[in-house]
Image 1 (tube, rainbow, N blue to C red):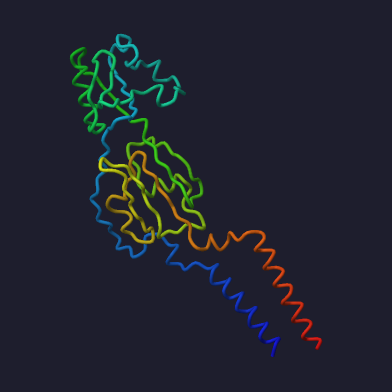
Image 2: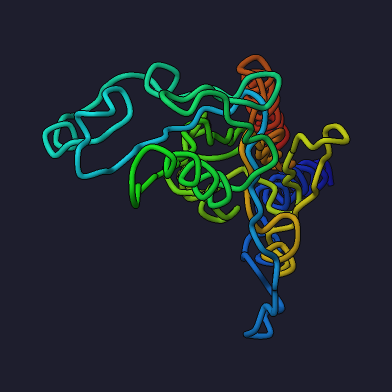
Length: 255
């Protein structure tokens, strides 16, 4: 009778461990309940703000007449290893940048396209048909938590989706809770948190579809990680208990 009780207890311990170690498929698979058509019309509307760093390049027939901003063929082939802060123009607290020849330009609240067109009109006072290229250098996001490569990522494109941001970080880790992600975003009205459930296709639409400059993507761990991170002392304690159970079983069999 005692041997049966011990065996049943050992079986129960193994069963509990097995249940903790398994993760249902519904908690792993991305974008379930897909209808085949997301139907999202969300647009990406990134506006320039105070503290942003931009480049303003001017292409003209006579670039040497505009040193510091005109782009010649020779300059275009030179690799520029300077930091974004060194090679860009920073929008100050008044929402302005100071550019060579045209002076102060107010850009806060404009899109990249609007800023390009506005600066182009300013340069038309100095030359015919100027070609201006404006790019934002300070577009960065942070991906932290249960991902393969957490860190700070600079975005070279003008926009990036949530899925692309997670792909930059090497996708979610084995212990990621795919139902418990959030985007922490700064807005004009303060910081907001956007909850995300990657097992639901609705995560592809709305405010969570695109990532904005300085967004923080946090991926929470699941309960399986907490169970797996038992301390070494607890592991040793479990081994001792198991050994005592085996010794007790052998002892009772000899009686």
